[in-house]
Image 1 (cartoon, helix red, strand yellow):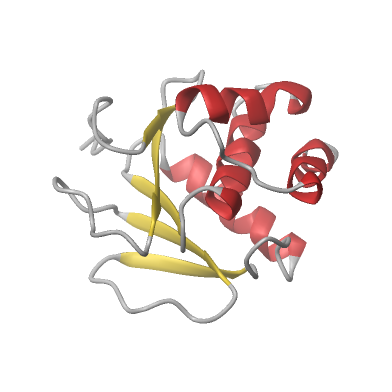
Image 2: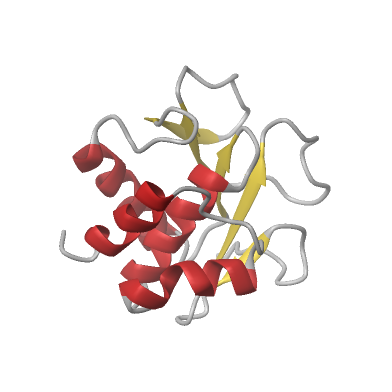
Length: 144
């Protein structure tokens, strides 16, 4: 059964393939509506427990993932599962790390790396991807 997000739901970003992914900040209350099938928590310390499947990607605030290979593997799994399931990306505020991961997802979905940050800012949040090194990470993500 296809269990994707409602396109109009809070924080849901469309990808060119039609996949829908949700980004959010963990400091804010859980949005109303269905829960994710998979959540990637992009945090410097272990996330709080949730009632659905989740992965912790160790990623300190304003920085880059501690293990870039593990982060890429988690993002690739999330992208694959987003074709048929509700997938969510979350950090504390929902902009920097979440925006960076969503931009990487856009690259996996076929958006040129040079346009991925603009795609996320246009379709998710205008201030997503906060630092120059996060923007550089997206550019380098395309190279593998």
